Image (cartoon, rainbow, N blue to C red; front, side, top):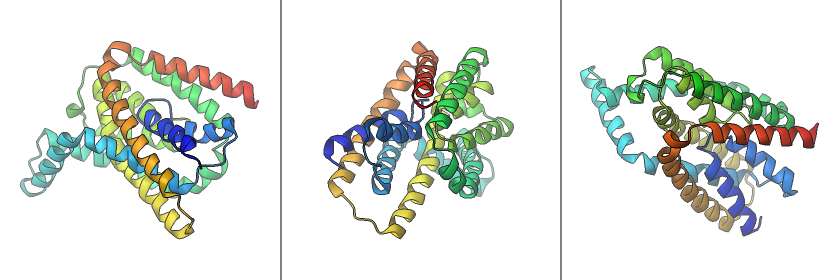
Amino acid sequence: MDIFQAIILALVQGLTEFLPISSSAHLILVPILTGWQDQGLAFDVAVHFGTLGAVVTYFRTELIAMARSWLSSLATRNPDDEAMLAWAVLLGTIPLGLSGLLFHDLIETYLRSPLVIATTTVVFGLLLWYADKTGAQTRCEYRLDTGRVIVIALAQVLALIPGTSRSGITITAGLMVGLDRSAAARFSFLLSVPAIAMAALYETKNLLEAAVPVDWLAIATGVAVSGISAYLCIHYFLKLLERIGMLPFVIYRLVLGVVLFAMFL
């Protein structure tokens, strides 16, 4: 892999991981559309750690407060808002972790085709539009009860299907259960911390078992570019979200889906 290819793929990962347009779909499609060879497992690990570093850095204050309150609540059994949010993130992660272990090989074998990506891109794009139009948008992430967290958690499982978008489906579910746009996005990004960490650790295990040669320059480039671009993406997405809404991302998904159907049908 040359440096130009590493930069482009890292930018794709960094910019699409937190936007509701599916990073996995773009990382599958870019090599197909450009004719590049698959970027390899080591590079996938690198860009995942880059985006993980970005979201942890951006939400470091919230994450530290949540961790302290959660640990305190174990002793006092009197959780405050920060502890309850930490419990919500933990509960919201369990179905994804279990489903990933059970269905990872099946999904990798049968659901990575361009037509699957085209279908999920369109279907979940329309669902995002519906949720944005009809959701009550009256709650913040600190006012999530167990039932609403379970709805978001089960929706996140669908993100295992390429083209769905983990951020997209969790924001959609958040809007459907009454979160406002910013709250839905923030809770989605907090959920991404354990989700990306699990994916990165799983890929790291596979990488160690495969014992493949590592291009350290490409790896360093991937970590740096994906991390910086992801951090900027989170920052500006949250700043612009209330102003622009979800419609631009819905339109992008529909156009991308139509293009993919035209190319691969």
